[in-house]
Amino acid sequence: MKARTLKKDKVNIITMGCSKNLVDSEVLLTQLRGNGINASHESNSQDNNIIIINTCGFIDNAKQESIDTILQYVDAKEQGLVDKVYVTGCLSQRYKDDLEKEIPQVDAFFGTRDLPAILKKFKADYKHELVGERLLTHSAHYAYMKISEGCDRPCSFCAIPIMRGGHISRPIEDLVKEAMHKAAGGTKELLLIAQDSTYYGLDIYKKRNLADLLRNLSDVEGIDWIRLHYAYPTGFPMDVIEVMKERPNICKYLDIPLQHGSTDVLKAMRRGTTREKQEELIHSIREMIPEIAIRTTLIAGHPGEGEKEFQEMVDFVTRMKFERLGVFTYSHEENTHAFGMEDLLSQEEKQDRANHLMEVQEQISYDLNQEKIGKTFKVLIDKKEGGHFVGRTEFDSVEVDNEVLIDASKFYCRVGDFVQAKVYEATEFDLYATVEE
Image (cartoon, rainbow, N blue to C red; front, side, top):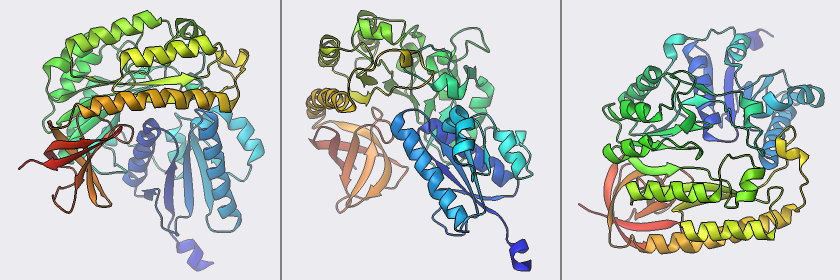
């Protein structure tokens, strides 16, 4: 018994879901360590006795993965391999009562804004002096920066407001302080994320203030790239594009989830826009910055999407020729507006539609990439994998977009460094390049 009482707690944080969850885990990790607690993120060590699972509750697959992970660690607890299992994040926020009944072996469930309550379990305090300081769980040369939390949009298919609450912007001075801290630690790229980045500032500055935030962040010394994600199209502030055009360290890249290409389905989705307005917006942005890479996501199989509406979306993708595209299948989510609509398509039919869209996009992407052959790009090296150094241009975000592959047997690159790379071959989603001396 004596040996047992001397054993010091070791905490392992497991993160499911999106980059916004990853930021939350990094903040939790920083606070725990700041309180002198031995904590790590997704450690392979066998001697972690306390597990915190940061769950995702966005769509069915993600929910199932989160539940499976909880059950895996509950099982480990029953075998005596871990002492405590805590669950936080979106799934826990959304289904706390159900989860407490179904999986009583979990020691405590927390919501998405319960960081002080989690710290209390460790007799730890929330340290305000650590605001802006965040331990990264990946290579330090890039960092996600959450500029706001929650969402006020009424989209029919989305449960994020249920899980994350209403929109709350972080003050510009806090974000600049965090950027300076990141730059001092070797971060060269900031990836700005939010549930809705174009809404930024409306709550605290009484106006859309994303352009102002971008200007302030672009003044931070040492930050070479600033990348903008999750920009809601309705009411898009065009002054953001003006700042992007004038500041060389703001990537000519925009992640703008459009969700559909049929006006009727957009109406059913409660997106507050039409296909024509979306096309007009994309044309306006490209007119101002012709070289911009626009990334969007679409949903296949939303209630109300018949063959006609789906074909409208295919035509939309064919016309718009997005540089980057992701497609999700519609997930019928409880307590959302769309849950009351009839979900007529089978999962297989939805997946077939998603696959068809991606086939259309593959050809578009292939054609666009062929145009890059013979051109030289500034490339940030992310990792070495197999026989290649793997990097990205300013037109590509981490893990979701095209990659630049450089033969490691012929060229040496340092992870986290920029190189000038000349493309000599291209496939649908990869560019092969040599390093220019």
